[in-house]
Each structure stands twice: as structure tokens, then as C-alpha cells.
Image 1: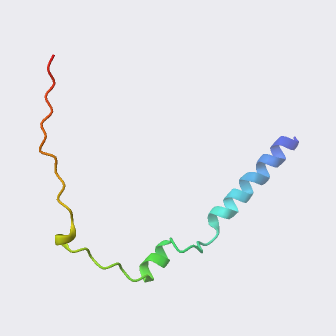
Image 2 (image 1 turned 135 degrees about the vertical axis):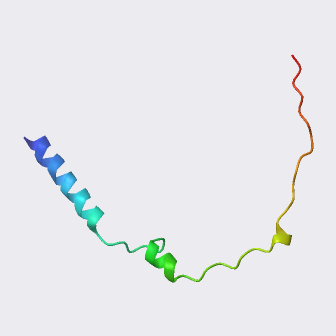
Image 3 (image 1 turned 120 degrees about the vertical axis):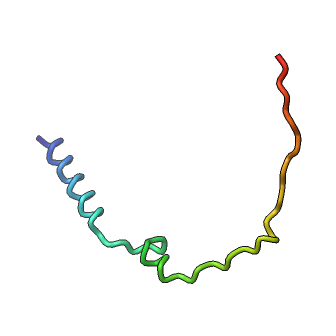
Length: 58
């Protein structure tokens, strides 16, 4: 019976935590009001490519 009581208390605490309001800086509301970062220029993107061809011989 003690196990069921403890399990019920844990479930109730988790349920209350899930219903609590978000207060962090990474929530939808905080991100909506934050200034958006400047877009990167396309000329600053590196163009690293490897033209090496790998052949597998059997």
C-alpha cells in the first residue's frame, strides 16, 4: 500500500510540474520576443568539397 501511495504522489507531482508555466529563456514566448540573429552572407560560407573518388575493388 505504501508503494501505491508513493507512486500516486510521484504522478501527481509530475502532473503539477507539467501544468506549470514555462519560465525559461528558451521557451516559445521568449524566442518570439528576442531579436533575430543577422542572416549570414552567402560569400562567407565555405565551399569545401572533396573531389576524391573512392573505388572498391573486389
